[in-house]
Image 1 (cartoon, rainbow, N blue to C red):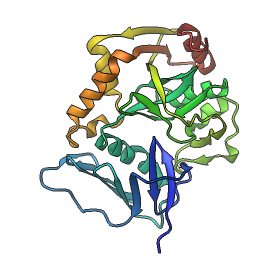
Image 2 (tube, helix red, strand yellow):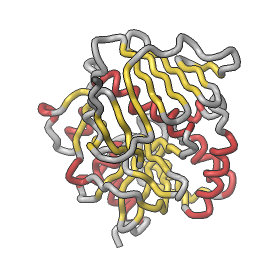
Image 3 (spheres, helix red, strand yellow):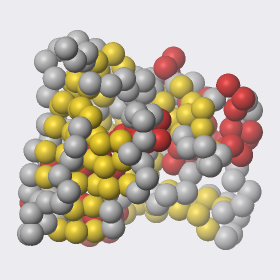
Image 4 (cartoon, rainbow, N blue to C red):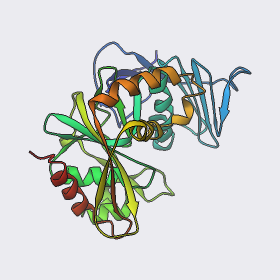
Length: 298
């Protein structure tokens, strides 16, 4: 008889046949089921194909060479086919990233590529391209005593709330050093990468919260910090292009759902482009600038 593990993450009750230590244990009726097994070799001939993935309206297939294959069906089922002995942290890395990204889109949710921090009674999302410093800035806010809801993927539900993900943040070794955090007791996300999992259980906010602002992070080659409020088409495009795995949207045929949710969200939030010098990083100063400029601590 199979043993099942029940969790809550991203506002969803999730049942898995293998342990997912990143998630919080929970009780309830699962709406997402995860198991190991054989996935389809390929989807039907009408599937949209991209690098390593295939997608149709109801199905999503992701293949990572020498690691695992993943299949997502109708926003409620995930099958993981490890190409190693078990679903270890490397296998889970893609499960908790691209695979869940596809699942969110199948369910008509809005996953934003960014980290979510609680200020007062609402949330700000810090978004931007990979490597711009989303998680690093979030870690700086956490160190200042603020609570966080998500790292890397911030999911906005149909009520326009950000739902909590799980109490874990991924940081590069140099950022850990900047924040005076010892990496010796931390686990690397992959053996060959100097990026580590940091537990944030004591400062993880576990309830959905409305969103006020989305900050699109940017770097520049001049000193000082700057910001610009985005409006109209710029505002729309900023969130669209920072939708997590937006390249999956067409294949999953979720353009209409995505457009509707974006249009519902836009009148309720402000979107800013916020720029910092490329070097030095000045994490603490950048966090203070954002807090003071946008009065997030009042």
